[in-house]
Image 1 (cartoon, rainbow, N blue to C red):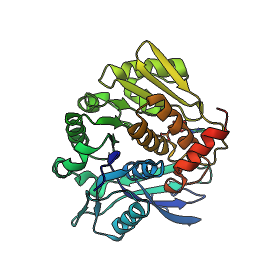
Image 2: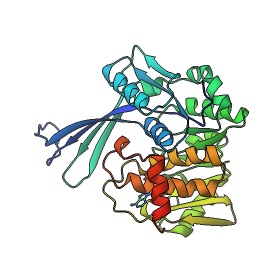
Image 3: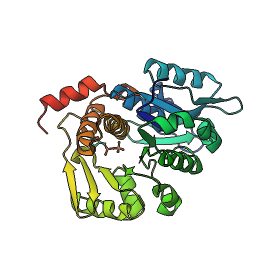
Length: 313
Ligand code: ADP
């Protein structure tokens, strides 16, 4: 087996999306307008994003022995994501996200983690072959914290760069302080950084304050993504650098963060330079907002390079 550039330890799910003009109230039944199913889960999306961005990627995760699991596996295969350590649980269902979108574009989401919460430290141990030989490991918070922590520790022991996208946001930073000690690069978005630090992020200065606070917990590099305002990074608490966003026409911002994290991990694993990786990731994030959906909007390396060569930031 080829040595991976990036190993993702994370969630995979089937997203069930209903569009309806009227959101049902308690006890009410309404007729919706459309229904679609997509592959999702932050682990799945970031693994696909990193592969399309040019890296050799392996995913460590857990799906069920059900039809949703089959579909997720097919999409990973189509995208050439390595799945030797994608486990299948015969007792639990594949994770799902039940998403209701109304005419204003506002959504309500129920996530049932299913097999994602059954991915164990033992499963991670069995994948030591790829964890110890990869350059970068990429984690999020849609699996059990104990499992993510175990993966981070194993990777650190092998001098692998550990990246955490702390999404979805956790209300209390104390829940993840142990994990943060083992993280090299932390990539929160504006909301996650605000919730973790209690700092209301309204501009570069407040984002810088939040980044400095987050550094105290262990990560030496903080990258805060600020949507259309770009991404700010801090490697030395004395100063910050803002990488402006590429000017694009935003259609649907879903998965911009996943595209950014996957592309950053991919580029860093091959080039090693953080600022160049963030510029590449910013172009990937920008392209992701120009198309609808999550997986369909994750861009290919050639399109990312194309945007970088033609657009003035
Ligand atoms: P999330 O999806 O986690 O909320 P962000 O919205 O911060 O993440 O987006 C991640 C990155 O994608 C941003 O830092 C930026 O580089 C890029 N991006 C996001 N939205 C836009 C946009 N409207 N225009 C251009 N780039 C964008």
